[in-house]
Image 1 (cartoon, rainbow, N blue to C red):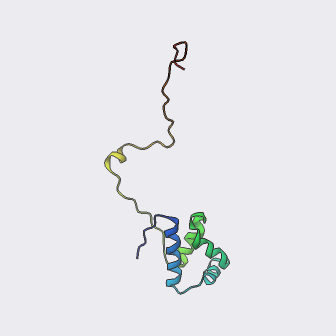
Image 2 (tube, rainbow, N blue to C red):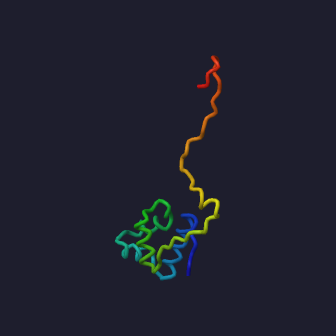
Image 3 (cartoon, helix red, strand yellow):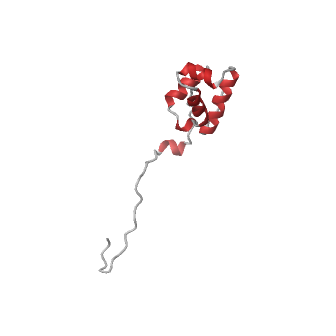
Length: 101
């Protein structure tokens, strides 16, 4: 079964569901990952601030895997790459002497 994930909260709920589907407690999963129960609770509750390594290990132990699915980009976006953090042009104004600054 596939579970689309768009937010860290969704990922957390999916992790809990996967764990419960296997009939495991947080403490049991912690033993598999060599972490304590409190750490498993933190991973499930705040996956957005958890390392990808720990999340991927947890998913793997629970029988899952990560897949990145690319949506097809519209032709106009694919042809013209976007520039990250490009500076905006400032309009030059004439100063008191008539010179543009």
